[in-house]
Image 1 (cartoon, rainbow, N blue to C red):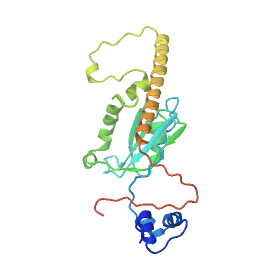
Image 2 (image 1 turned 30 degrees about the vertical axis):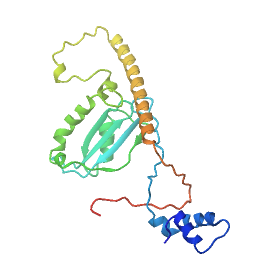
Image 3 (image 1 turned 120 degrees about the vertical axis):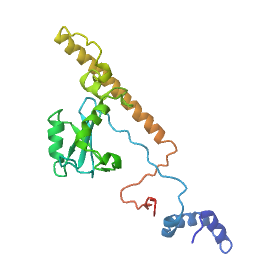
Image 4 (image 1 turned 90 degrees about the vertical axis):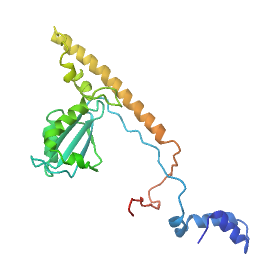
Length: 243
């Protein structure tokens, strides 16, 4: 077999020489099927990270995924439907059975919130931990998603709950605080609208900055290959443990 361009050239020169020898050998080895299959790749091909479009308003874009299979709950559910809003990161999670995904999405999300302009999903199956499978999902999902929605998100630096409703959620350690009086509903409505506009703008800017930083970090040392329609490529299967 061939041992790379340099070694092959030296080997050929021991017996033959002609004008354009190096160029001819490079072209020949580049299309050699055996070489392409067996040569060791000393670099990882990585395309530039694509920055997705960030929504301009709440519930314009949502991310949808389904986790399965899970242990069947007391209610007959074995799947978890997760939905996350793009701007404020507010999330909704519900359990359902194999035949009710669409019905669940319409009744538990669209009817409760609104119809999103776009839905992003990869349809991948989420691998759930063994411990989580042992719990009754119907009993704990609501508590888990409440904790998520009332925790400051690392991308927006705001609670998803606060970005949706305009104020932080009331939780156990805040119950003893004296609530502030609202003397005029019109004033409250105006104040809420103004606050939401500011927080939405801040959250959106934080998301865009996060995406740009992630792209810059991801693209460091990238080896880009431009592949056109009709090109033939070799696909190297991933190495899996135990193989």
